[in-house]
Image (cartoon, rainbow, N blue to C red):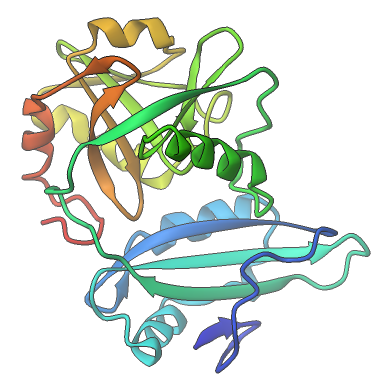
Length: 256
């Protein structure tokens, strides 16, 4: 079951549109049959040239979740595209269950992948081959995902999440959209940091800084905030401020 161009239909999703299609997408978490942070995701799609009238309403997404049986923690992907001939915009929403969620997710290992010429990161484009390839390369090394850095060693993001690096009471994340996607959960976490006694800053973060980091997390709208246990040879086994964040009402599946 999917939502396509204004109605629910029993069809297979177009997971990867044809090569001549350009578009953007967003992925949000859902819990108890409710999409989380949809208004923020909707505004981001509108900022990337989607028209108000083509996007689903909150109740459309809730109907899709119910019809698909996705009442437990799940993922909802919304894609907006048009082909090169400027045919009318198409919109598709599809949901799927997730197996791991909440603050108890195990720490992840990130393998470092360097991009000499990073693509623009202001919107989450449908054509994500570079990100997929980076993630696949890191998995081939035995890691869970890639931590992508540019040719000068500045951290960008993972193949599907933003990055936060804590040292003392300061938490740094690469600036968006200059270095990374301005993720929805990234902004939620920046807003929440003062509640747990931390100060957040958006700045260039270099890979060498991880040697001195006290804690590293990755964030997106489906997983919430996940601990990083290893980047390359550097490892962590304590995340005291992640424990503090886990007491807050983070709007992600399985969180309080």
